[in-house]
Image 1 (cartoon, rainbow, N blue to C red):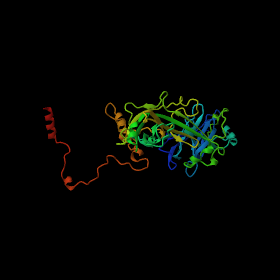
Image 2 (image 1 turned 90 degrees about the vertical axis):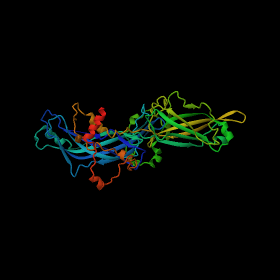
Image 3 (image 1 turned 180 degrees about the vertical axis):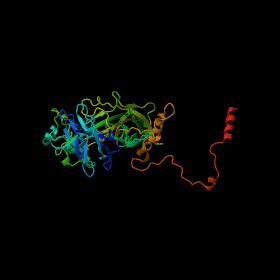
Image 4 (image 1 turned 120 degrees about the vertical axis):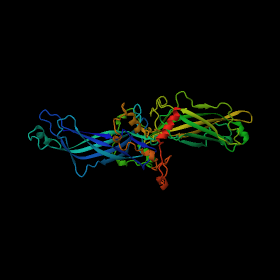
Length: 513
């Protein structure tokens, strides 16, 4: 007898949307395929294989590992959820009787549906050289069964003589890697407008400033950046608005804007397992009894460790960062023309607006050369021992004309948080099925399929088209008119919707003339 199992998820990946929430859950569905066949034997003809299926146990397990020179190796279990698939009130007998002589095995599919917590971080692989962090998820399946002997077989056959020495109760297991992806928002069939976040930048760092403090403190900077930046984008739109508030007219006319500089950083943070208390206050990690070394990780990549690692016992966390600007781009933007943009602020106090698009790169190998960490642009996120964050460093350089005529300067420095994420692919158009059906028209004008053969749910709209992220029904932009009963006068008077034959003839004659 030959028995094999395989896990077949319903989708290639487990997709989650929005911010991680401990109160939400997603469905991981699919089936466990059980293949049963009778092996070829030189001593006797193939016999039907018969087993008694006792249980099917599924376990979804997630883990995060960190390997750095300063911290060494750290691993933590994110989640562990087990569920036994219901097989009915009794065990199930499986047999390939009648098909034992074929080379194709008999297959049975055991359907499963597992609830997965919605706060889990996205899957992440180790960087080149196995230095960095990794977040992985696995689905394990253990099938327990009992081998049944065929009572109709020859009692003096070779397999019967050997059966007392074989264990009748057996189990078989397999594992499938599950890719978890996080997206900014659920997919839609229409492009969503880009949301902006406005930051009123106050309290700038003015180290080495020569402009009087009472003048610098009156400068206001308002920065607008996207709420989420797609990791596939090549530019980052930035809008700056500047003005002064409660500054005297004489000082406004002496003040001018020289330039501004931007720098975009990706920062990775690695922590030891002992430094996860803050994360545990937000998300329910498994207890210490389920963590290494009390319960080892099922797929710990211990081989990533090398003899070169010499971790510091006093170091609990370490960071590495790299620039997202292209090589050779200084990120400095100079103002041309009249730079006295604050001259009229004492009278009107209006905002002076600057708009630009900052180029960003995806390959960070040159930026992070010699530094352990990711070599590519990664989405923003965090796990108990690993996190990725992004920020924009803004420097606004102003100049001030002293009463003596000397120009002095000051650099106003700010830090703006950024959030990079993945945008879900758009949904197919709502009328894609009618278009496909039209495309199937044959040369003679007929169709290879009848409309009633299409799936009954094919024309149903997606959930995101009817409900928002909070589960509330979306308002239709063009609602249907309210129903009004037909009046008795309307029902008695017939209305011709099409012209009569004589009217058609008149139209044709007029067109001909």
